[in-house]
Image 1 (cartoon, rainbow, N blue to C red):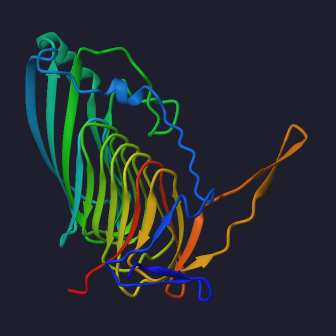
Image 2 (tube, rainbow, N blue to C red; image 1 turned 90 degrees about the vertical axis):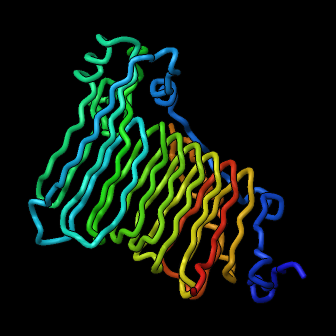
Amino acid sequence: MNAEFDRKTQSWAGRRDERPAFSATMLAGAILITAALASGSAAAARAGSDRDYPVRKEEEIRKTLKFADVSKPGEVVVDNFFGPVTVEGYDGKDVVLVARKTIRAKDADTVAKAEAEVKLDIAEEGRTVDIYVDGPFRDHEGSRRRFRSWREPGYEVHYAFEVKVPFRTDLAVSTVTGGDVEVRNVEGEFDVHNVNGKVRLSGIAGSGEAATVNGELAVGFRRAPAGACGFKTVNGDVVVTLPPDTSADFRLKTFHGEAYSDFAVTSLPLRPAVREEKKGTFVFKSDRSVGVRVGKGGFEIALDTLNGDILIKKKSSQ
């Protein structure tokens, strides 16, 4: 028997393997997302072929970094551009960094140019350890996540980061292209971003945001979120796994996809349109997300994709 929606109780009934789907057809007009993609960043960071960049230089960087202020949990910032980032919690007090740097260039002179232009900056200030890849692709007049287009430099500099942090650490982790972002077994506030690649968080506790543009976004909590959360991609599924005792309110948006839940849910009312005035004319903007409640409700968890499904999964008790 398929899972069925009881309009009287406003809840789903059915076996766990019969996950209810909130399809775009069922919710006609209720699911909408507008995606704005910045052009130029992916093109500027595209990987060159071996033919284009025949000269290669590799380096491994290992450092143990310390928090200057240990009176409260630390924060680790990893801001990459081209390459993957993996962060894992461990039973220690320092930040352990392994960075594998690879330069590929058209000739030896361009390798020297790459070494002069692209730098790994590391700072230990207060409660923050900051690991930052700087280069001509950065827009220094804007925020750190803004990039500018620049002409083909004749090289590419790839950093693959592996970072161990204390279990209780706040995180701000990002890359743009050339790899995935993965966070494992960390508790705290998190802000995790990618553009061309997957984002995977597993065994986490705390609250925060994670997003990518091209790739799946998967998040697994070992405890129910400690605050509001937002998870978003444009091209890919959004998969969130939560403990069986979770109580939360969800806001769901998908355009070309469906939403599924292992949990029994009840519907929440649509949010009212927000009135804005533009040049003397009133404009009403509708949120148009679908709201559902798990358990008794609680912190809001927003799940958002354009081309993909949304899955709310129940963590196995084993």
